[in-house]
Image (tube, rainbow, N blue to C red; front, top):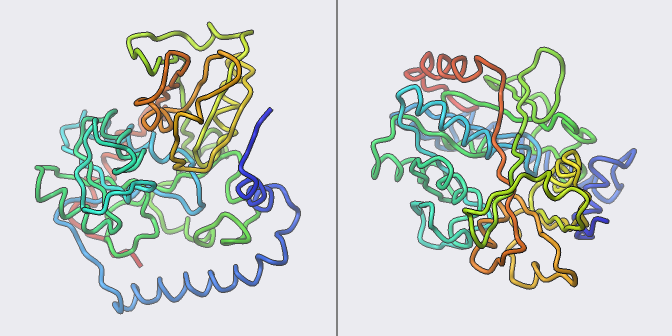
Length: 339
């Protein structure tokens, strides 16, 4: 059984299941579309300022709202570039963070309530410097001022046109690529689908058309939040009653993944970037509670031995890392405009 947020659940139904969006949303979609056009035109004509950083900038983003696997890809790319002799740094808006003193350098032990859950997770898993700010330009400038990074990876920010970029990578959910094809709020799109024709690479998460780059997420070991040394194969929990919780862009993806490994949890979906408290871990039965790494960084301080994180890693086809490295190297002095 899955318990969801009613408002979130209604929007998800409108975007991905309803034959047509609610008539209440369609007029708002027209206003949003006009705002998108005016904004892009302003950057294209130089009416709004763009900033070029002195090192290559790689933007990993998507044209839909919600999570599609950008953060695992950022982590994978940071490792891939580091292995090829580069010194990557990561910038992010820090969604969900409450810090007021920005830009903010993020460390593995930073408070996710201040810095945001994804930046803290990225810092933990990459060891690379991470900076958050509402304006990616400020985050990038601060990153370069305090580190020796020679390439910047922007976690999200495909629509943040103030920052010029050398490479754009769009991530698409292979199971529900553009939803109903409508723009916000009638659909999940932040920009029209034609925007994808402008990016340098498209990666599909989970599944995708034949011949395209497919990224999968793999991880079959649970890590105990109270004692990270306690690691168990997820299959050890087959046949046991358990809970699963997720506050990500598409919680059902996490729940489905657990089911593919033989677990049958009672599930609870939360809004993306949800702020948790001890009450969210209270359950009437003393069953194991499974959560994503992104949720775990916000629950560790009050979690007990029932709570388990499920780490995953992005897996891409052989040669993808070399191909992206060549793409970045080939554009590192070009400084492509963003509109």
